[in-house]
Structure formats: C-alpha cells, structure tokens
Amino acid sequence: MKVYTSLNSVPKMKKKSSVTIGVFDGVHVGHTRLIENTIACAQKLSGQSVVITFKGHPGRHLDKNSDIKLIKSTKAKIKRIKSHGIDIMVLLDFKKIHNKTAAEFIKDILVDRLNAGCVIEGRDFVFGRGGTGNISLLKEAGGQYGFKVSVVPEVKVCGKRVSSTSIREYLKSGDIKKAEKMLGRQYSITGRVMRGRHIGFDYPTANLKLDYEDIPARGVWAVKVEYKGSIFTGAANIGYAPTLKNETKQLLEVYIFDFNKNIYGKEIRVIFLERLRDEIKFGTKEALMKQVREDINYIRKKYGSRSKVAKK
Image (cartoon, rainbow, N blue to C red; front, side, top):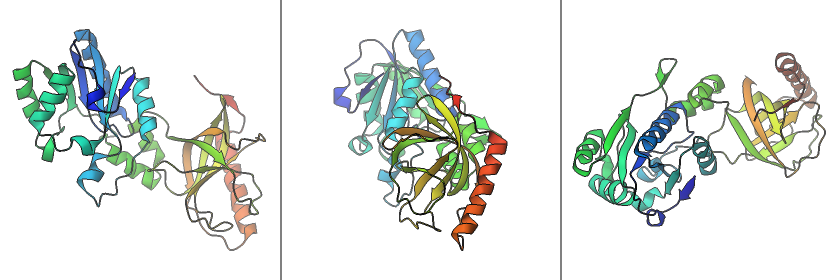
C-alpha cells in the first residue's frame, strides 16, 4: 500500500479508482465492510482502491472543546488498513482541506486527482466545508462526472449500530467483549517496556507508557502477552498504583506469569481478556499483596499459564 500525506503528492490517476473516505478510527467491522466493497469495486474497474483518511480526528478541529480520543494511533490505523489489501491511502491533515466546499472536494480530489469510478460510503456520510455535502449531493455529482456511488448498509452488533463512539464508551466502561465484537478482533496495546521505579512490589512487572489515547478502563485485568512469537498469560493494572507508587501519569503494568526474560526496551503486545476489579488504594502493602495473589490465582485457573506460539 502506498501512503501519500498530501494531495499534491498523489499522482493523477489514468485508470478509474474506487474510493472511500472517513476517519476510520479503530478500523472496526463497519469500516472493514466499506474497505471490502471499495476493493471489490476497484477490481471490477481494473483500477486501484483508495482510502482517504485523516491525521488525528477532524472533530477536534471543528470543536476546540472536543475531548475525542483516538482508539488507535495513526500508525496502527495505517497498518490495519494495509492488512485489508488497499492499494493507496491518502492521509490528510484535515486543517489543510476543511475549507474546501463539497463541490470543490468532488471536483479537485475525487475527479481531477483520483479519477474516481466509484465512491463507497455509509448513508450518513457528510463532507465539505460546514458538512454541507451528503450522499444525495454525491450521487448528483456522480451523474455529472461519471462515477457511481454505492451506499453500504450500516453494520449492527447485538442490535446496536457499530461506531467508533460506541467502542470508546465500551472501553471506558471496561466492557471489553462488546468493544471486541465491534472491532472484529481482540483489543490490544503494543508498546516498549520501560524501567519502573522498583518500589516494593513482590511481582516483577513490565511497565508500558500509555501512548494510546483511548484505553480500557482503569483497574486490574486478565491479559495475554505476546513477545517474540510466544503468548503468555498475565495480570495487568492500568492506573496510578496508589498503594505503593502513587504515579502522576497512568501506567500499564503487566506481571507475566512464569516469565523471567530481560525485556527492557523490547516491544510487547498486551491483549485484554477481562476486567477483574477497580484500582483501589489499600491500607497496607500486605493487604495489596493478598488481593494480588487472589487475582493471579483467579487468572491462572480461568485462562491457564502455559505459553503458546502466537498464530500467524
């Protein structure tokens, strides 16, 4: 997949292309449906499939008071979209195009630059300055410029429309199973292990800085940890470690069962399985350790502790 970070860098296409446009935060099952339809149309046209998306979230630019947090980083979004087989990604800075009218967006980008033969979107798609462009306008322009517009039906999970907003809500509440159903995969965080403060904890933990914006709820979690092709069971805490450390920034601390390798500076992937409890401040270290032992015993019993080879 070729990635272009400005409109001027995108070569004008001679063959017809198939295009879909959106934020694609989290790349959930609804996004996957759009991508699959975009690829299918590109194959019919014998052209290339194109995703137009954005750095960050347009909502932040449109509303300065917005508290929208991304489910995944831009790097993770690129990787996920690439895995679906898209040919071209146009990754734009929303601030540089937000003043384009809907008509300008269609003519300058879809027609002149991408030579669109089909445009694939959901029924509530809006675009152009002030959000004045919609599916009806897009279809009208398609008749004028010679591209087709395909509206993909919304995807529902457990009777609810799949959306990035709903996934954020599920992550915030700790309902990881519903988040996973909408994502179409397990939720995980990948990061490099940094050195901790080594303050009196009886179980060695791998500490990760939380660069992800929207993360699962604070508390204690059962997790799987992938490292160099093997998967281990573990217990994780998201929060400030109030009993022993009282951190000023949230940390993800992971105790990996039956694991004794030096992994400082190494990358691991933490897969979230189940939220066990809230993070609380205990009166004594002994009380904390008693609860931690109970947490570990529960996780071992339910999820096992033997390492496995990760699936390719």
